[in-house]
Amino acid sequence: MPPPEAASTSFDALAREAAALAAGGSPTSSPSARAGELTANEAEVARVMQICNACRYCEGSCAVFPAMTRRLEFGKADIHYLANLCHNCGACLHACQYAPPHEFGVNVPKAMAVVRVQTYADYAFPRAFGALYQRNGLTVALASAAGLALFLVLALALRGTLWHEPLAGDFYAVFPHNLLVTMFGSVFGLAMLALAIGVTRFWRNVSPGEVPPGGNAPALAEAAHNVLKLKYLDGGHGEGCHNEDDRFTQSRRRYHHFTFYGFMLSLASTTTATIYHYAFGWEAPYPVTSLPVVLGTLGGIGLLIGPAGLWHLNRTRHPLHGDDAQKSMDLGFIALLFFVSLTGLLLLVFRDTGAMALLLAVHLGVVMALFLTLPYGKFAHGIFRSAALIKWAIERRLPSRLQLGSD
Ligand code: SF4
Ligand code: SF4
Image (tube, rainbow, N blue to C red):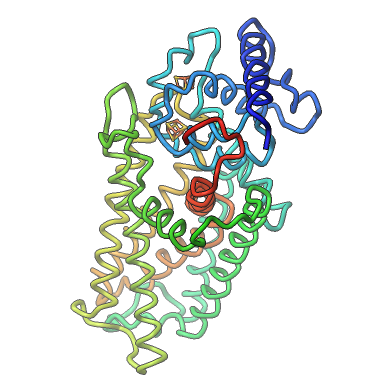
């Protein structure tokens, strides 16, 4: 632990560096960047964090700023952690007196967003697949085309036609149950494994493994609460974050909730149907009032409203909030979620007609595209951000190493 005079010297150094940067120095002139440790984008996060650490006006906005004040220097692991802790709410950009066009050019959400996507690629498993984050729009398009082609051809091969006499909603008359379980179970399992390995790599890099007094359980409970409520999209004052301008809005939080809980209800529907099938021998099709269908319908409605709202918000977002290069990844994921839901609900409505095989093939093709791209697209942000929130909930329960006063 540095003595107070050492900390004061570090603050002097930070103030000198911020002044030098304001006078025209580049992000890569910071000590860490000079040592070759940081990329240019990471050096930009270190630069804005050094300015913010001297300013601290945004301390109450989110978890990033109190986490920042526990550091005097920002190494690679700190930057990766803070980038994933940022929810891109925009509050600190709209509050900042040093934001562009000021010569300091402080844009925290953009600097964090650029590094955040780089961390997904850096920790990806297999590592070579990390490049898919950079070309995610193309990846989603190719996965969608491949998924659709696969199931349309399979339906033709198995039934000889995509149009048939009504089959009383029996999906397994088109695709055998075991075939679907094998295909989707293996792809979803591999996607979850890739994400688990990626986030474990991230965690090992950013977290020293300290345990707070009282154990990890309270920290985990707090992190779960913050994830489930999306606390840090409340702007720090509860009125919401920013989207296209200075106004506060709860829309991003609400549409995220529709999307997240819609996804979870859809997963619950599939899980319930699996239990029915294997534990009780109750085979699909299930009546519209059954638990799997009710859960799936509610989830599907959530996955129509949420992604439609997020699409609109993304298209109208303030240009300084984020990284334009990531728009195709964001929109590709949003579109996939929307079409999974739309095709699923259409299938439910028309499952007793001769169009079932065609609708089922299209739905399964889109679901397969979603599963294939889950570990290499926008879905990763929920996993990495949850890990960062757990780290913050643990860290804030530990005494600050700086010992500069109250946290
Ligand atoms: S974002 Fe701007 S106002 Fe907020 S702490 Fe940083 S420098 Fe200060
Ligand atoms: S954009 Fe929002 S979440 Fe990110 S650092 Fe700024 S205030 Fe915090």
